[in-house]
Length: 382
Image 1 (tube, rainbow, N blue to C red):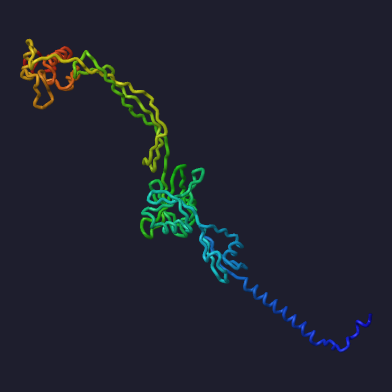
Image 2 (tube, rainbow, N blue to C red):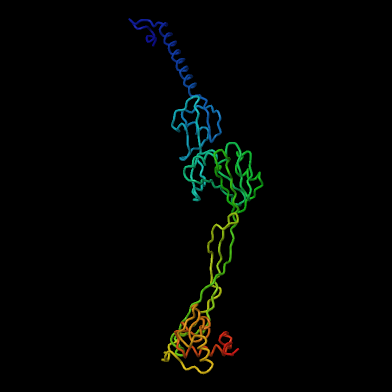
């Protein structure tokens, strides 16, 4: 057993010097590793500026990229947001990282309403960026569920005044950075359920933003309109051809409609029919048209006594006579209205002399000789 501990013949004794050197070398190597690790640690530790939506702060971080910095600081970034430098960029000490979150805003472009996304920090900045899109660009404030609050996803402007046009007056607010809701509240502006609030750039360069409050009233209005009646025509053998007689007088009906009317600052903007119903049916007119042939006769008729003298006085006894003014016709110079009132149709001068006499006699029986005042007086009938 003890022979194993003996030195082997011919072998050299082990020297302590080299083994000690190896140990020192290993220790030195360990020092180098530690020193190198310390250098890497120092390089990972950095201070950068992080600006999120205009709020800048100094951040100490070990992140090696912009993406890592944002994750470490809990900054959520989505596809429409803007990050500079880009999220995959290497982060170095002293860098500035800017994040602008996108906001959906409702915009009126020359009166047409649409939704756009913007990374602007204020309404002032957003309006400037969109000024090229239309002549009239306005941001439309969102309304709360209760209808009493209006606000924007953006503040009005970083600093400086704004103007508020409401109820026929213009109010100037010195500090527009407080936000739309605060500006309206400070002025004591109470909004109705349907009121509209828009924000527009000043009318001229250098003028402040203008907040416009429009008073909107939505109401229902009942409108009654006339329903025209129909006319039913039927033949009558008791009337001459060209003659007509109203059997039943037509009566218009009524249509009742309910309209939804929108008034903006007291002026009607739109009207829409909600419902309509015929509340009174029209009564059709019934008119008889003559089918009986007129009797043949010449251009004259035998007139007895006074009627002969009256016809000669009025028309010279000419059944086709027309007055110089073109308003009186025939033997007895009927006006069209009187002729039709007596049941005649067409022109009196186109009727037979017998029909003219018959209707003149019926007129005299109803209204007297005063229907022909000048000639009746001349003939001593008045």
